Image (cartoon, one colour):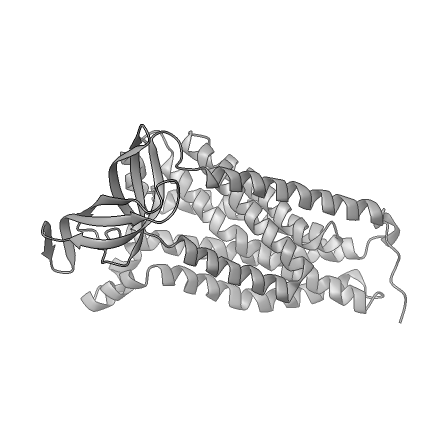
Length: 382
């Protein structure tokens, strides 16, 4: 039985690796269809005569002479247009020496038009990801490799399956629940293997997602949150997404945000209980569950505050505006945008509170079940 489980784990990892490779191929060839291509280039000169500055923002057109540094047009100089719309969060003004991303139009092998898109940040992002991957593998070794594969696999599922189906009009909540259950299974079993701790963490996470979904539906309608509080939601509608259920997409975002922390709590509790059972094979179900409850209480005590700080960090400038204007507490908490973030924090925190005890009970029962039923040898008495 043990060999079968080990083989299943490697097959599972192979499937995830195959998915990652297919997703990587799709990303590498993205933007290469038709006669428009995306290429990196270095700015060698700029013309700012048509830029009108107004305070911190700017509107108008910046013309830049750019030399392409990669691809079949490497070394070619093009004149690229950079449109400025006065949006500080989107606009970028370039100077000579900047590495930027260009969108070039090709006709019969020749570039007929070029547009500056963004600063070229991809190489430094890859370097940062390499640091993350190296730190993960050095510390966690084989588990780190598994975690890295599950990370890439989850990213691929979200990008290549979940989001396209949402855009095509699939029911957001059933789709989100199915995808999150799948991702929970992939991530947990990839890291922990097909073990009792993994099964306990998976079942605890699924139960927590069910509770979170119920709370989201109940309180979401009563808070009158229509779903337009998420970034780029208005732009999504303008681009033709009028048939999308934005309220349920917002609810799905709440579920998605809470699922990662739920998996973390469930794994913490189940692995801790597994360690207790390994050191004390004679421990009973009640005592083992009590140990799981103690671990869960400690973890939840900091995790709820972690969610508060994480969401607050994303809206720090908004909070600064409120403080600078002396906005009253009553007005702040009743604003739609603030209410949506309070909703996210509290729904996620309640879900975490439910995950810990459920996982403790499930792990207590599974870890004290017959060892022979799992195809492993009972730990020797010490």
